[in-house]
Amino acid sequence: MKKIKIGGKLEAPAIAVGCMRLVSLNGKEAEHFIGNAVNSGLNFFDHADIYGRGECERIFSKAVKDLKIPRDKMIIQSKCGIVPGKMYDFSEEHILNSVDGILERLGTDYLDILILHRPDALMEPYEVGEAFYKLEKAGKVRNFGVSNMNSLQIELLQSGLRQRIIADQLQFSPVHAPMISSGIESNMFTDGGTDRNGCIMEYCRINNITIQAWSPYQFGFIKGVYIDNSEYRQLNDTLAEVGEKYGMDKTATVAAWIARHPAEIQIVTGTMNAERLQSISKGVNTRITREEWYKIYISAGHILP
Ligand SMILES: NC(=O)c1ccc[n+]([C@@H]2O[C@H](COP(=O)([O-])OP(=O)(O)OC[C@H]3O[C@@H](n4cnc5c(N)ncnc54)[C@H](OP(=O)(O)O)[C@@H]3O)[C@@H](O)[C@H]2O)c1
Image (tube, rainbow, N blue to C red; front, side, top):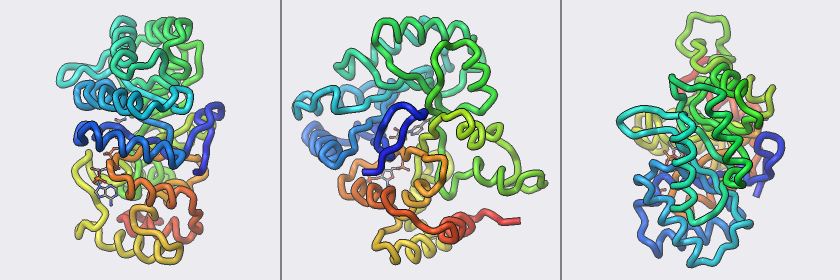
């Protein structure tokens, strides 16, 4: 399995196994899925306190306990900061309480990475800094990251922290690629040229922050899968054509497209299907050409000026 260094420091597989949909499995199925992943070298798991209202973390905890997977054989990250339907909350009290809840549900005494899930408009960097300091000092969290943040939000947050932000989890796929199109269409009056995230790709590369690509197979805001979707016929044709050369299915070819980017993006998968996870692994370990990368990008509906 291809490895990357999250934030240039934490060695991890180039695939993070997303656990948002774990709640759709029963206990035995979850055990099978997680056991398979770990045996294939996919030992990085992405959680959030809100997935299944905490149930996903509980299912995971039971499965790894039954499978007797030692804690140090896994890299576990979880997220906090969303109070569903109400607000985003980066207050010290909320962060500290959330982490205690996460650790209890996961049945562990530390997180490898804590991610702040969505930017809180009322964020006070030094208050977050205080929370992070206490969590690190207590040995509850080893590294810190963010999600869905633009570059200046990270910069603002960073100003109140003692630790370096090492990851930003962002939606990314061939069909959801504003962080690519805004660079390619720079300084143009095109839709793709609109900078929606403060040049986050460039910012993360310069600052050694790993981009974790969430919902790599969904279009819109988790609306459905674009693979084999007739609205994305041209993209599907190109994925099939490029994939054929390497013996990959379309799912694997998307993974190869994401992994081809020099930013060393970590893919956060959502599948609960062990075979599909194997396909994605194959894609991550396959290097497509520059021409193929651009062909997939254009087929997804983007322009080259
Ligand atoms: N930071 C954030 O704001 C944020 C937001 C959303 C998600 N996330 C994280 O990102 C992870 C992935 O999100 P996601 O589940 O939306 O990602 P995804 O990988 O784009 O979607 C996975 C879903 O698509 C289905 N699917 C159907 N055909 C597929 C195909 N050919 N290839 C791949 N999947 C196919 C899967 O079903 P099967 O199970 O049958 O394969 C699964 O239900 C989550 O688990 C979570 O950890 C983070």
